[in-house]
Length: 211
Ligand code: ADP
Image 1 (cartoon, rainbow, N blue to C red):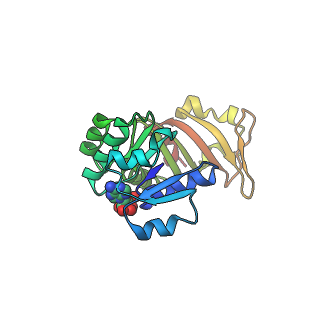
Image 2: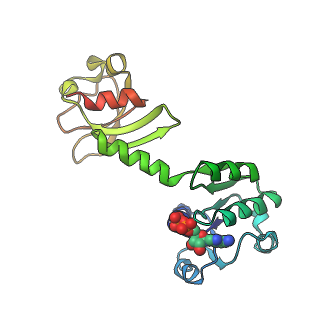
Image 3: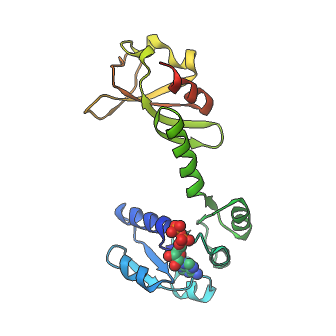
C-alpha cells in the first residue's frame, strides 16, 4: 500500500506495479486518485490518518505500507501510528527532516527515507566531481560511475592496482556502445571506458580527480 501519491509516493507505486506487485494507492486528493486509477491495481480516496479507515481498507493484510506524505507532518505521523496500531510489520515512511524522522521512528516506522536529502547529496557529488553517478551507503562507503582516469587506460586492472594504489575496487566496466561487464583482473581499460567503482567516499573522490 502506498499512502500519498505525490511525486515520491507516485514513483514508488508505479515502480512496484511495474515490478508485478499489486498496489493499493491512497490519497485525500480526488484528482490525484483519478490520475492514478488507470495505472495501479486499486486507488482509493481516503484520509489515512484514521485507524478505522485503514482497517476498512484491509491494510493489516498488506506486505508493506509506504507513507509518502511529506508536507503535512501531522498527517504523516498519525498515519504511521495508525498502521503501527494495526500491527503492520513493514512500514516505510518518507521524512522531510531529522526531527520528522525521529518522530516517525518512535511512532512505529521500520524504515525512514529522506529522498530529497539523498538526491541532493548525489547531485552535489555528481556536480562537483567528475562522477556520472553516485550512491552512498551510510556516511563513508559509496558506489560511483565515472570516466576511466587516463592513468589506468591501456592497462589490465591487475597492473594498474587500483585497490592498492587508490583504495577503490573496479566492479564493472562499460565500453562505448556496449553493456557493462564485470571487471576481472585481466580486463583492459580503453579510452572512453566508464567504470563502476566501490570504496570509501574520500577515496572515490580522489580517484575521480586523477588524470
Ligand atoms: P511529494 O513531495 O512526494 O510530492 P507531498 O507531501 O507534497 O509529497 O505529497 C503527499 C501526497 O499525500 C499528496 O498527494 C497529498 O494529497 C497526500 N496526502 C496528504 N495527507 C494525506 C492523508 N491524510 N491521507 C492520504 N493521503 C494524504
